[in-house]
Length: 395
Ligand code: GLN
Image (cartoon, rainbow, N blue to C red; front, side):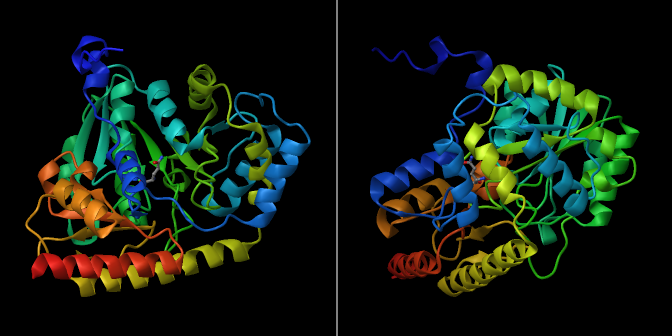
């Protein structure tokens, strides 16, 4: 087939964004045989009970479509978890939608609630999917910077970003890529602004259980007055190390949920049936699963942050999630894309160029993001390779 270039056949909307840099780095990592610290996905096993439940479901021939908005059993398990862990009261019949990963939950939530031309506030640095999701919905991204020190909101800037055009704000805590965990005061500020401007909040809480140093995850929807104007998004991927199963969910008041369910139905029909069965088993895991998950990630975090600092990167210790955003300016004067590609090809360690997490792309020019969702031996080998690479660059 002939390639006429992008302009000729693709919609104008689609021309406004590029392919995901994170997924592109994974392909480059595979091509080069590099250790993939780019796309955040574990290389270790998922809990056996959960895997057994998925296998059993397939062997019992649960191979057909589920109820479009999710199996009754999984919705009940999600509502129960939301009450216990997130302090969100959700009716499984009317307030919960199971989706193909939290990625789908985010895209359909924006399409379902924001009119064409409406503004969606996206604090930066942000997980790159939010911008294309907003554009696909025909809406307009509006960015506010999280202040560098502690990566908190700049109150004045956030207030100034809200207007009568604001329809939604995306709130990602723990944050990918910075690891920032929003505290009660920061969430309260968002809640007050949403109320003042009659906007909704769409949260991404996929890293809710990966949180360090005794911090507590707080869901925005649990704050006074927020349950009716918040869509709470999470999923199985990170908590149970099953990113390829594609099971996520959105929790919202009935009226919003009805809109989400309509878009979800016509987009993907339903999330995979056997993995929904396994999700019920996953949500039954004892507290020790969550304690161990956070503890093991904290150990990996400490090792990776210290190693990167010793190699010459400037990197703060993340408060949650499993990424380190590292500044490489004392190792190399390359820009982030050249540095990340060079690292992948020559050091055989893949990372994500920092600029893909910023609308003000220059803010990420001397940064790369490493994921530490890997076995200890994978991380040790990756850090050794980085060390040798940095020494060569400096010599
Ligand atoms: N959240 C993961 C990351 O930032 C990737 C998710 C995905 O690729 N769908 O790397």
